Amino acid sequence: MMDWTDRHCRVFHRLLAPHARLYTEMVHANAVVLGDRGRLLGFDPAEHPVALQLGGSEPEVLAQATRIGVEWGYDEVNLNCGCPSDRVQAGRFGACLMREPGLVAECVAAMIEGARADGREVPVTVKCRLGVDEDHEYERFAAFVEAVAAAGCRTFVVHARNAWLQGLSPRENREVPPLRYEWAWRLKRERPDLEVLVNGGIASEPQVQEQLAHVDGVMLGRAAYHDPYLLHRLDVALYGGELAGRATLLRRLRPYVERQLASGLPLKHVVRHVLGLFHGQPGGRLFRQVLSEGAHRPGAGWELVEQALDATAGATAVA
Ligand SMILES: Cc1cc2nc3c(=O)[nH]c(=O)nc-3n(C[C@H](O)[C@H](O)[C@H](O)COP(=O)(O)O)c2cc1C
Image (tube, rainbow, N blue to C red):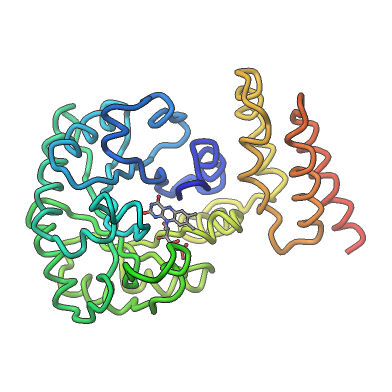
């Protein structure tokens, strides 16, 4: 999620959910080809399996960016057909591609070629909406999927609402257009050969379980960020294992944090992603407060995290 997640966030989420597939925020294909690859593509081996999400609509550039992503070691390359921002529309990519299935098919075909260049079988997948603006016919959505699947895409992550390209901010575009999970479920019924994942408004274990009765997987966005312990509970519920406490999980991040500090990264860049760990728990606000007030101070180190954990322990004792 642009402006929210980054590689440090993914390392933390990996500790919480060893079986989840993690996605990068969208990176424009041109930036991958022309920009600072270390900054844009660098990731920690702990993040595997990790997918690189690309934005763009030029088949040749997307093919190059895919090839580069695969060479950097990504396990999947995903094309964004869901972002509604004005900037993205102006660049003719993101959600407005829902209206151009032929072009998306060309892009996907080129990306699949690019992904083969390394000799590894790295899947090329698509994240899409149900449609844009006033598209209310399931058949139009199904035709989009059909065209893109014919180009070789086997996996669709469906953000199960339309994007309204005029008059709504990106934030409103994640809230206002109604969710229609039934379309994703129907797609899975009609095309059982495809892998269909649902995204949008899913924020609890019962909601995830309900979706899994109909589709192959679920993508969590905001809930995973605001309440990351949910990822751990889901991982244990779906794959087994011991439920670990929040403090135990956080302490597993210590070696990573210390490596980052030793390389000169200020603590705040990592700990901003853990602020929601005690979401809804006694002491959760204190935990956030201790970390957000202390982490930007020069020289802040792991002891601050221990102080924040002590604050929650104290709150639990009096709660
Ligand atoms: C701050 C922010 C940034 C986002 N950036 C991306 C992005 O880079 N790529 C993408 O596919 N979706 C992006 N999204 C959309 C989410 O992936 C997801 O589709 C949407 O929030 C609905 O799912 P949710 O209800 O689980 O959050 C972003 C969402 C937020 C809140």
